Image 1 (spheres, rainbow, N blue to C red):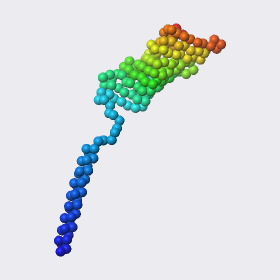
Image 2: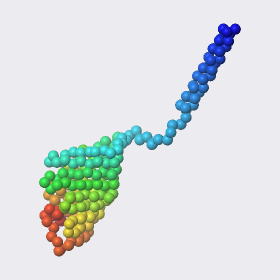
Image 3: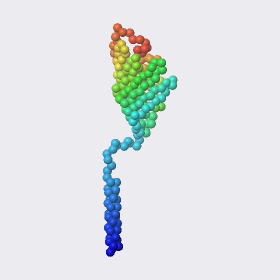
Image 4: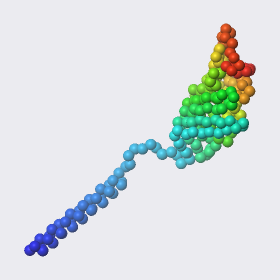
Length: 200
């Protein structure tokens, strides 16, 4: 009788174990087929993307420049070009200090070492001037800056507004595209360090 009871008990346990195993299998299969939780959409196959990117290089005279961006994206069809969000950085001018720049968006062409800044563009040399614009190209290797769009140059004793400009940071020469409107306080005389040497 004791053996019979033990056999019945073991049979019951095996039956329960089998039921549990089937239930676990069905639950796992259902969980596998369930839709995945919502995530950020994947990038297209032809794009690469990274956050908080820092890029740097040297100009023609070996002086450094560096900038960072909140987001950088490079398309496979144009590996030379990197799209930037919120780029900001600085470029060495040697004994003349440095240029500080920022914008809402931009594009960096690696081979040419060109940085195309767009929207709320600000480029400044502390203690000398600040340039505001909506579309400005910085040629980082040659330290030239140009724009074919409206710009505003702010100096210590006035400002210049124009429909475009060219600037050579090495020689500190500015050329403006008309019409040009300038306002200066003739009661103050800016020192050579506070303004470009020549404005045309």
